[in-house]
Length: 349
Image (cartoon, rainbow, N blue to C red; front, side):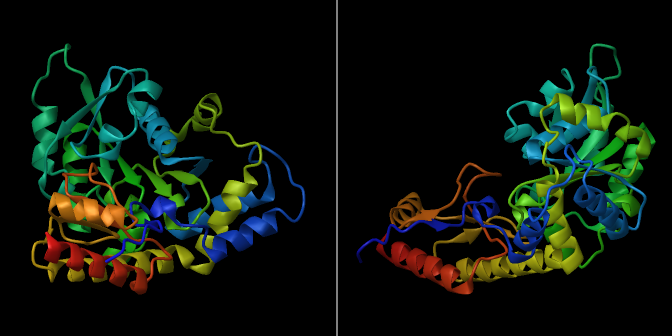
């Protein structure tokens, strides 16, 4: 069969465009001039909308990207001589170019393993109690990725157990919510039920992966940790002069409910793809597809053939295999073409 090399983007939900609701509000914000550096009406409205969204008087800040959100938030949660406990596959460990250490002036990441990409209370305690001497970076924060880097989600019970362990050892809890909306959709839980109600101190909530053109929201439920965070953002080059163009699209997601519809659609497409791969002889799912990512092992020759046919996917994310990510605009027809190509390549392998 002749190869079709038209790019078919499933490597990441970052490749998707702007969803209609976000674009609508972006254009509304562009209709007239407004104040700069976050003093505009759109940024205030978005921050207030987040407080209703979480049913909590939280502190809200907007930054350009996830690395800045995670790095600056973790820097605000400890000192340079502290450490952050995270899973060995966590994005802050594997894919942020040392950003958390850099912006915290040296706080060390301490990693441990855990099934399905999740930290466990036992794993956290093992790192906290490994050493007590002054030569060991003092643990201060636990960082959780929700949904995880391998497409699984922490349940409320798991989150509460981690909070209990954090309380036992005086630790803060940070949540990397790059796909937080997908976790809410997967668990049919409210944003409050997966954050402050289970003891999360700060959430980095991604909009980019949920239909925005750019922009992440940093949400502090622990007010003390938010002190001077705006200064951190300014110093790090994250204070947008035209902040309304980051904030307004968030209103499009939150006010219309698109944040949840987008996540539900992406999750549904991932389940469909996972079921399709599971039915192919020679393909094996690596993790439960609980959010919008599917990890599958395929022969090297099959992966190469799929790339030759224009499919984009990563093989260095998580614990190996090939990762396919569905987005708000992924179609079943696209996934059917992928499964057909995989079936052809497996038959020829």
